[in-house]
Length: 417
Image (cartoon, rainbow, N blue to C red; front, side, top):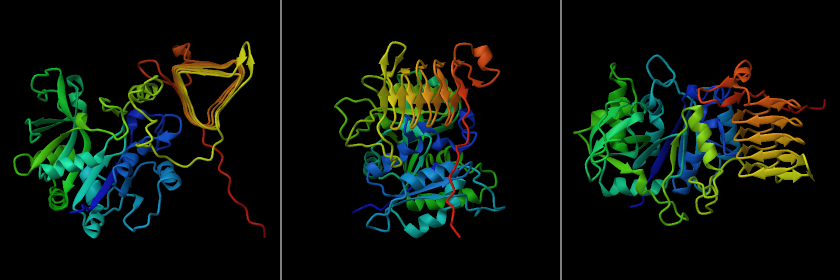
């Protein structure tokens, strides 16, 4: 039997812990790796896995996310069931509210499930950095004859309070679910680790519809999959955990380790970007059989100019996106976005620079994140005196300096009359 699979991508969170990068944009729209957005990972995973029918549920500060989906993901296939469509909050719940939780977000769009009548519904988050062959999780769900399957991965016990923690048997059957409990049980034989939910679920459609209607009618529910629906299924439905560590990506070398990062904080986001700089990165963006897709930018290639002492365009252990010019400037251990200009004598180290930034002559930047359209004046320094930086910028506890960007000018077409 050929399965009909419908996907919902939950992209409505505020992303407050990534502030100020989320001051003007939704968390899934935050740039990553020079030319991508965080949401590109889940959408690429779905398309690469053969799941072509996806609704993206959006809510807060969604304009940049809508624009990115329009520019890179709204495709029209040969069949009517091939689409990536953004869906704002429908105000279908009692009181016409915004999404009250992950389950309510899907419930407010339950008509889309009923109209499509799929065999399975994939419900995935939009704010993690990872590659996943979702087809293998679907096959696991079918082999186990599961009604609901949760993707899971071991994490250090110290992070138990940040995740839904799963208790399961050797066959993957779930016996307990503990939502963000620091005292959650550890993995048998591994007292320093817990089995954490990745926030990615597969449901058989009949079960999902029944549970969504029941949850919506429950006034005591917080209307969340992790807090309400999944724990309530333990013991009364076929509920399984899929071990993400077993997932294999076509085109990866044998023995390649799975990669997943929850980039919920500025530190985690920074480290995930820095992972890309390695000679043999844990997150492989160069696998042609598993492409990371994004908007189709029409940028020229990156350019490095001048070869004089103190005025040499150099990039070392770095990623430099298209359209950027290192005009005598130097970049080391950094990720540089699209259309940046780094002028003579400027030095950027251990930093993330978003699109369209301009770094003046002899400016020095270290361990910083520069948002879009930042202009650094000639001779300025960032990251060398955190006490002074804190007077003007956002500085994290670990000493990462975040410089807010500026709204870019938008050209409006004129009409001759």
